[in-house]
Amino acid sequence: MRENAESWLVGFERFLSLERNVSANTARAYLGDVKHFQSFLQTHDRGAFTTVSLTDLRGWLAVQQTSGVSRTTLARRQSSIRRFFGWAKREGFIELDPSLRLQSPKLDKKLPPVLRADQMTRLINDQEQAQPRTQKLAKEGQKPTPRALNAVDHSPAEQQAPSETDRAVALRDQAMIELLYATGIRVGELVGIDIDDVDLERCVVKVTGKGNKQRTVPFGLPARDAIGDWLARGRQFLISERNSESSDRFALFLGKRGKRVNQRQVREVVSRRLEHLGDTSARGPHVLRHTAATHLLDGGADLRAVQELLGHSSLATTQLYTHVSIDRLRQSFSQAHPRA
Image 1 (tube, rainbow, N blue to C red):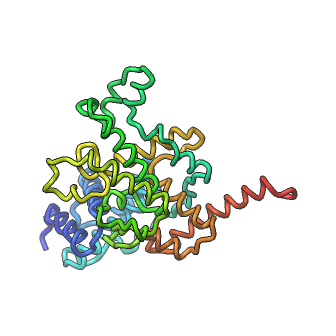
Image 2 (cartoon, rainbow, N blue to C red):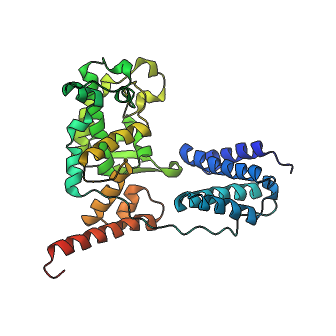
Image 3 (tube, rainbow, N blue to C red):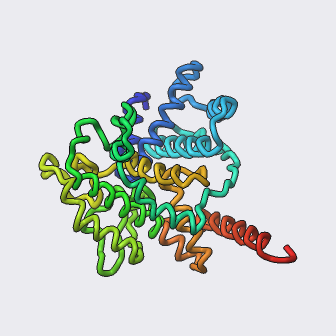
């Protein structure tokens, strides 16, 4: 079959979204990796997809490794290209799959950053960081900088918003952090939650994970109370009539413009509080996922139960957290045992 690179990419994207049933973010990552390889072929005059060899693939990975690309990124790109050529062979675009003998790079098993219980308590109770930066500066008698005024979710036009809006944002932020820690869900799963997905009576939430797989995750009373406060006393102040016809109106968590909160906004909220802790370099909402998993295992939770809660397809992924727990146990032993 004569090659049309653009039609191949369109077909592969359709395959990912319909047949593989992967998330939009994953599909974008796979497509981006394939386009990166396509650019490599063009730059090095290596020909088209139909003439790709194992040597071409190894050369592509070698160039990236030399330029300092992480092993994790290399592994993902290799996985993407394998999926792509596997799909092309099944479609009859190529006779032989050049990626079959491509070896995966060995990944460093780095232990994820985890907060101690006392750090987590301080992070949750850090209401000062729940306030917008501009509001805190005003309280302190300082003039907000242009950077502060242009921060995500706090644009200049919104600085004259009534105090109810700021209180609503604080309630939302608290509910998001409580839910992230209580459940260990991914930030992408958090932003996709609708109001109807939450059952406050049973203290469970339905989330859609990788591969559009749904699971039901329990949470505790602190998270229930925080979500209840947000729904009862905050969410109504962020609802926008402009979004009354969109799916955003069903979202559990909203931004200041009434749209569904996005992953970047959640990262801003969590990173701001983590930075304020002062005794950790950890950043981003994934830290709360790592922390939730480790604290569950520290408390004696069954490994397979934690796997189900986190939505891991492989138990090996969950087992990484057991190493974190062992390290924490060893540290406690060294500090407390007289003959350590």
